[in-house]
Length: 143
Image (tube, rainbow, N blue to C red; front, side, top):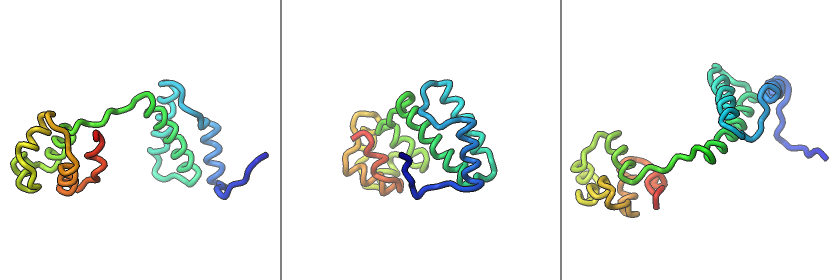
């Protein structure tokens, strides 16, 4: 028995969606070859100047399928605390000494984190998140 939902594509939006589904069906990505084809379709859609609602809906669904495959088969390990701190410092153009002065964190703590000898503590995470204007969750990935 078919169920009815409030979400419906009609007219031109339905036509564009169904045309895309016909050309490249929405199904779980099962191989690297399938992934490459899905990315090619996504690139084609992203290269257009404007997308209608049907195309956007299709692109969202295909992106989710690609993301699920990549999460399973091409997972990216989180950056270490040292790598994250080094990146933030480089991006802001600050030295260890300047970071210590601006945050009140001891120079030794900053040095130990950068050397990979010490992980971020909750206190350090809060100070760095405030200083670099980032969400604490970004810095707490390894806790």
